[in-house]
Amino acid sequence: MLNILAQRQLQLVFTYAPAGLGHLRVSDALYHGLPEAINPSVLGSRDRSIQVIHRITSIHPLARKAFEWLQSGPLSLSSNRLYRTLLRSDTDLVYEEMLRLIDGKFEPPQQILVVSTHFGLAHKLATIKERLQKEIHVRMSLVVVVTDDTFQPIWYVDGADLIVVPSHQAKEAYMAYGKQFGSRERIEVLPYPINQRLDQSLPAKAITTKNRQLDSESTEPIRVSIPISGAAVGTDYSLGIIEGLRARSERFIFHIVTKDAPYTKGFLAKINGKQWIDVHAAGVDRKVVDAYDSLFEKYIIALEITKPSEQSFKALLGTRSRGGVILLFSEPVGKQEFDNMDFLERHFLVPSQYTNAALWAMAEKNAGIQDVAEARIFDQAHTWRGVRLPTYPQQAANFIWWMIETGIFSRMMAGSAEPRSGNGHPDELGSDGVARFWKLVASV
Image 1 (tube, rainbow, N blue to C red):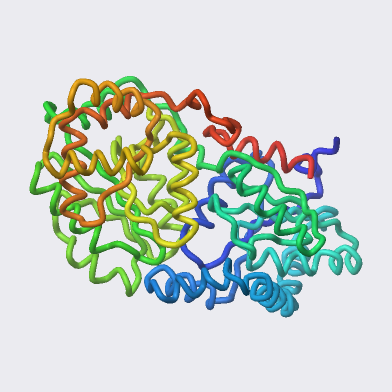
Image 2: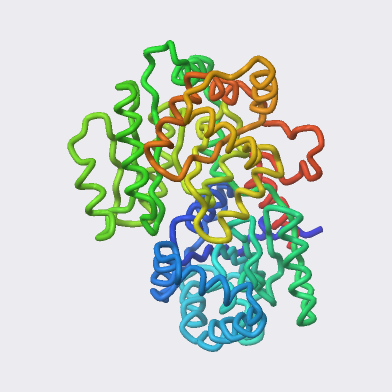
């Protein structure tokens, strides 16, 4: 079978959209897994309305419910067809930008491979594919990477050569949707692509340092990373946990990675000047993503407080890797975050909701774990890579401290990242999603 990546006159194009940091993180992970000989171009969306919609639906519950109702309610089929039509109706600018990319090359490409991590430009590119092939005699392939384990009809890009999703459950949903209007695009399941910089194995000394951070008897500083979402959701919640944990112990050191934007100014002002808070802020999304990856190369991090967004899939990393932190999930916001948590629970990477609630209840009473319960919890915890946090920040801080004192976090850190017995789809797990992606794409 022909390897498209080995073609000398290949033009690889990544697309991105100004809608949160998740799409950019996935593109970044895929970029760092490329063969060295390939030098890709980047095509960005100029549609700022995408960013506005993302922020509004992230912050305002009513707007989010309305948007999700249009996506999955009784009018979903017609509303998504309308949205798809609007995206595909104005393609002249995208066509001109593609021509500019091609004309700027010393040697015109014979093959264009586009990797889209957002549906907006993907629909436009699917529309102009035949026109490009006919007018300038260049073959174009379009690969769409769905960046949450969720079914959102607008992510079904008819005309794509390949759609990649993180689970068989998502694949079945997209295939069923495509059949409703007679479309049968190729959909494949691969482990979520994670930046290979985060998957680097730690030396033995660093692993010891990470383990000591979660030992209640140790004096080792406990380093906690807190990536702030592109929409700056949950800053007050994060601040409350920071204050609650610091009141518990001066061992806690916090590493904040955020965008320097008007809607984060208040948060940054509140944490500015505190020696135990290390702030990495940048005004450009690209630099925010780079700052996050660099953080793990500079420090040994044990815990991370995060939304269950695309960051959830760092649970696929083993704890002996640089990015293998224990993930502390805030309350899900939006359907895709609930779906991501469902993915983790299906794979035993987080406790069941029942078990997690039982842990909250014990922490609230500051109760010890009885012998039988301890044996059961410790047995299950060896596959957990994260836990859900309570809704209120002070309770969340108390819960985190209780998990350290009881040794549950230590058990999680010492556990195995291998698929648990009874896992129906072990092929959805693994930290090698990037390598497997390019191997699959090579045959598109």
